[in-house]
Length: 528
Image 1 (spheres, one colour):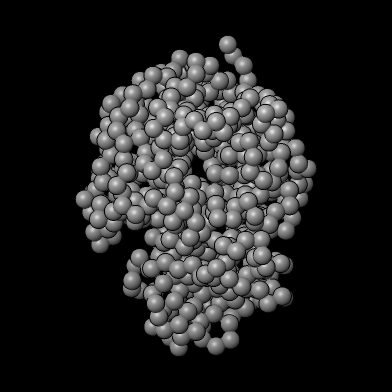
Image 2 (image 1 turned 135 degrees about the vertical axis):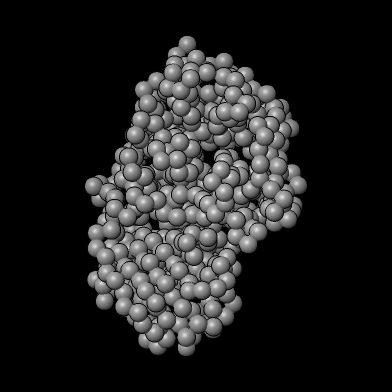
């Protein structure tokens, strides 16, 4: 029987029963997108709570961004799948809600594929979603099988979805209460679909010829990587080696954890290895980096979680986007009608760097289309009075991109400072004394909303310990994203000043700090 996924009220589930069937946000949508702290070139919903990205797919010229969503409130609640589409990964058009809760059951994360060969029988080219249904009452009753994997499909390019009503296609065996977030892909050598499912403290691999009948293949992670919380939102894909032979590639596993990231709270770790269609094994050069309890992290800031990728873009690039938040304080950050933002989309590359494997992240090229004004910066010594970028260029730091090459000298810090008339400031840059990149939001606002938001300066060791420091920075109304040394290091942080930062300055503390070259770009807003 074909029926749309609808929302049903339940008197025994107060927060679920309070919801209604919706196709648009119930909170008043913003007509200007100019509320305090509203990002101007990052995706946010008009209203409601937005969580992690899910179900990313490219289909017929459109990038589909699905995301965990509660349209009725700016607080976390019964999860829907929100939906937006884009032709360039920069400008987004909201779409009707894709998946909605059913009675006693909410829609957690999953993935979407294009079933070009009609393996599932839903039609050639149908979009098929494999997602987690979370049974709230079963969880309250203490059952360990309250999460299982289900199918839905779309015959109209993702505008509406039809559930596959034959129950779970991957049932929870009850071995772990966390059994969720399946990531799908087609494995051509084995001629079957593979799903990677997060199961408590590890992931499991499952195989299927038709997306309906699944067989357990293997597991990974019980004795490797970070285990500060349950593993969530896995992704798994092959990547060419950027500086390797023409046909050299490795498989990359992404997996997020709620606690234990390098600067506190939640983050996304990754693993590099090989996959034979059944088992994932770590590359020998990568294995020593991820013993049990230690991880390699995708982002060194505090606001980059559950990063997942579009698997089938038009140019073959692997493109990632993440939730710009942290579970330490996600429900407390200031918000008006909405809460939650996505990071910038980035391309992923894999590089062997002095016998170490590293993921390299670079903002997608389409973001350069937002550059409405560009000012070349003159080389200068940085020690002394900070150089006022805002005054010299006329560019507002609430929507600014900087490309900087700096000789940091041997001592002291150098970088960029944002500030306002209240004396609040945010600093990001490089510490030559300690050879660390840093992001300092400890003085960037009144953070009484959370004791864990600004407890320390965030730091990360430089992956390329020589030559000029090269930084590409994107400043939005309430965030900073640093891509350093050609994307070998990334740091993402939010900030919430009591009044917008309107002043941007270059600074240097050491006698040898010098700007070698730079460009400042005024970025256009993406909203109508």
